[in-house]
Amino acid sequence: MNPSWDERPTELANLLNPAFTGAVLRFAVAGYLREAQAGMPFEIAFLVFPFCLHRATSVRLPRAVSTLLHSWLQENRDVLVQFPERSRSLVPFTKEAIIFACQRGVITIDDLGHLQPGDAALRGITSYKTASEEVKEATSRAEFVGRWLALSGTPVTIYTLLGVRP
Image 1 (cartoon, rainbow, N blue to C red):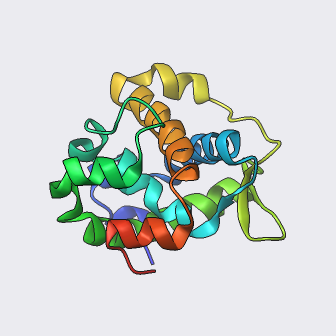
Image 2: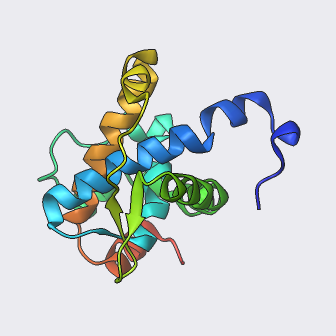
């Protein structure tokens, strides 16, 4: 469980607030759907923020979704050093983002437990995209990561490649 808002460091509260993370996740879900023609498996959502919101990782993401995850990991093995710990530390924020986005209809969960883009518009998303270069990059990377993970195999395969245990 996340600490209450008044107990969170300002930087953490600003970067990982559920409105922003929910929007980032929505972009990833839309990207996943674009490639897989199906919703994003619930467990894949927990890998989005470690890729998109960690600057040292996100700047090294491949330029094309055709780059295979396992090939990219071979060339960027150091990304794996802290990836499992980073993933675990972001679990509460991912859960908070999913809940927040689902409550507002920005993301839905289908009968198979897959995340789908909701019908609700991302109000204020244009301000996210123009707020700063970092925010614009985060939403762009999220869509890319969603597409990339959709083409990377089953959730079990992806988690295994990344050394993450659910």
